[in-house]
Length: 191
Image (cartoon, rainbow, N blue to C red):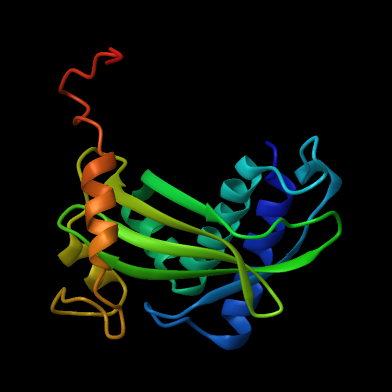
């Protein structure tokens, strides 16, 4: 519930923009304008590091709606889950500071898609997150890339035009940070 009103506002604005401007290309960049609110601050009076991830979720909502993928997912009983993410901070966002969240699909591996979100002020990156997300079915199982890409307008199920290859360091990070699959044991032992 911590950003529910912002989420509803972003969904409303994304739907309105979609009706007015049409679809964002699958490799296009979604942008929303936000302001650092008092509820976003930590005790040091700048944006709390955990809040960035919540606000980058808003960018995902905007991108999913803007590309038309949200309606496709809803109609097919699909949903997305974040399986891992890494965030890098460069500058602090201060109280009442306006910033843009820029969001883009940056590629995929054999099981997931990767997105990048940026907090940008005056064209300058303040923070960036790389997200690895999987598409699942409400009925169980994983959505294949062929199905996903066909849903965003590539009838042959190929990678949509303009989506870059994922940088090698992102593949390495994804592999190194992975936990065992859900059905495998994952004991909490410290070495």
